[in-house]
Image (cartoon, rainbow, N blue to C red; front, side):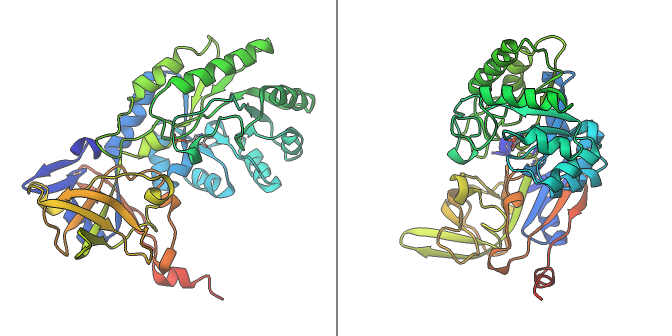
Length: 406
Ligand SMILES: *Cc1c(COP(=O)(O)O)cnc(C)c1O
């Protein structure tokens, strides 16, 4: 199961370690739930993208997890940011990412967002008919146009984004008209954007989308400066999921990019997903109707993916990692809903209160989608590398929650 964990994960003397730090020590020192990111894994994923698409502009899909320290780490690797709100833009700016490496998306950008994007010099992705006008009025100079290529990604319905009825992008006819309007307004139209969906398990639909983009620019007799193919490569959450590597996913796309055009890629999930492990402290263990529940001190407030997408996770006991499994357990969250189950069935040694449960592949769209449901403050986040852990997001407190109560 270690293949689902970050590349630095090791089991030594029955104890899981991440980035050279024992997981139990992280849980003791920083509390639980705790989201742990492995720096080595993030850097290795970026290196895989660089190797598969030399010369491409990489921008991190910030919504997978917006965090200033992670954005800085990525900036250190030359990676920019794909943002779609004032908040995400502020995170990227706080990490020192400048306009050359910023792409601003959104299907309903406000005038304020367009002005903020313009101030930073970000590349703005036009996503609705007439948005060129609003962008020009806000002072935007450089734009891409988002195309809806009519391709159905094989993934959860909520994260398909390029099908006919998508709320994102413009049909080819409408996109061509928008390009005309943008040029007439004096905007630099630097290319076309397409994003097929997220948690993609194969490249076929992305290749099809790219072929439609290529037909579109050919039809206009246009060689744009950029082709932006978005993000989308999935992450393995359990051993049954099969996924292409970065090279297998990006290679067939990169090789179809015409000479003289720069590729932009916007990976989010595949950069940080495997790098993240969530640690929980186990509490009550009980039997109910033939099922044995082990309860964690978090749940749908720090990771709502099981409820939103039917995500299936695996786990191990970090402090008893070498003990053989003794049964199948259901991992229940602490929230007041029967649906707050993190893992429906996982094989573990008989769990005891105080054990540390480690859930791999939880670096993307977990805490980013989290909430303070049930008045539960959000967990802390640490970055581990070379035997050291650095806190990169503080644990929220109940006082933080009360601050918004007048
Ligand atoms: C969400 C999103 C991404 C990142 O997608 P991942 O599946 O996390 O790689 C990139 N581009 C756009 C436009 C997005 O909406």
